[in-house]
Amino acid sequence: MANARRKKRSDSNRQHPSTSEEIYSLSPELGPGGKENKQPRQARKKENALLEAEQKYRIELQQEVEETSKELQEKTHFINRVTDVMPDLLSVIELLTLKARYINKTVLFEMGFDDLDKITEEEREEIVHADDRTLLKKYFEDFAAASDDDVIDLEYRAKIRTGEWQWFHARGKVFSRDASGRPTHCVNVVQSINKTRNTERQIEELNNDLLAKNRQLESLISELKTFNSLAANSYAETLKHVYINLETIVTTDARNLSNSSRASIRRAQAAIQKMKLLTNDINNYLALYDVGMRKELIEPNIELMDVKERIQKKLEDSNATLSIAMLPRIIADPVLFSKLMINIIDNAIKFRRPGADPVITISNSSETELNAERNLPENAAYTIITVADNGLGFKDDDTHRIFDLFTQLDDGKHKGSGIGLAICKKIMEMHGGFLTAEAKPGQGASFHCYFPV
Image 1 (cartoon, helix red, strand yellow):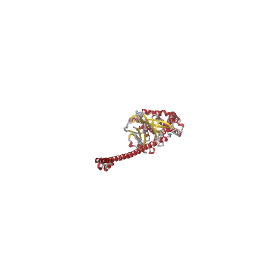
Image 2: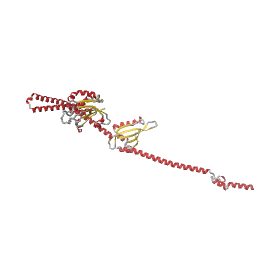
Image 3: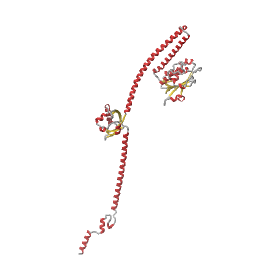
């Protein structure tokens, strides 16, 4: 019976655990005997730390995404702004369909075009001038064989919104390729060259007008030369006959003429001689236009020795002294150079000072020695030959006048036509150089001949 009671109590204990066992079962953080179990708390802390790290990472990632998006938007806005304000039309064209994948429409409208997306293919084709459509087609076809560095360009005409045809210049490169390396898109920059084309057309028209006028001028010059040659010969022959007839009258009928009549005839003969001299000088000046230039490297001293021999009698008659220094070689026409020197030397003898024998020197001058050096063209090199004399000289105000046709500073006191120095100036211009002079009244003059090196 006692055994029965103990068995009943044991069963009751299994059905109703003790308080300590109950608490342990309800609180997993406590172990047997009520002791704390640390493993669950550590796991929870670790889990919380992971949750916090994940949350922090998500926040940082969100911030980075936002900053990147903002930066991308700013760059996109910048690029769009650049393409919108640029003066040229920028487009990306799909080569297979020839449709625009990108185009800066602001510039498109500023150029006078309508929105290409809203017009038909036929209308789009009509925009290009009929004579340029084949060229434009070839322009896009050329991209098939183009490398990434090749630039393909084309000038063509297109009709803008107003119906006006304008010129454009397109330049393009391959923009993208497919997996096989075949070009799929091209990028193009189109510039309006209408003003340039109009300017070129105007220049071409002006050139054509100029050529026509030049042909007319050449014809007139040819006619003038023919007239001048015939007139000069006839004029000289007439003067010759008049002079001979007057001389005949003086010699055969002198006894029947009064002194005043003979004097009048002599004055008439002197005028005829002056007219003859003027005619000869004019012919000599005009003859320069018919001279075939034969420029070569010459020795001036050799040419001047020949000149000296040719004018030896004139030098002796005027008791003139001609001194020639050693001169550097120059590029010149030997015939024209001799004529130049003869005219300048003759001018020095003609305008000598009364009571003083002419002294003429020919030398080589450096640019730094000349008052005229300020007139030299930039980056130009010249060999300068100077002819100086001790003659009458002239005023500074007359420095440029003396080279004009028919200029006589002494009001005709000396024999001449006023063409000699004009011929000298023309000869220097024909050589691509120029002629200057400097002088002082009563102290002689110097003439500087600038020969291009």
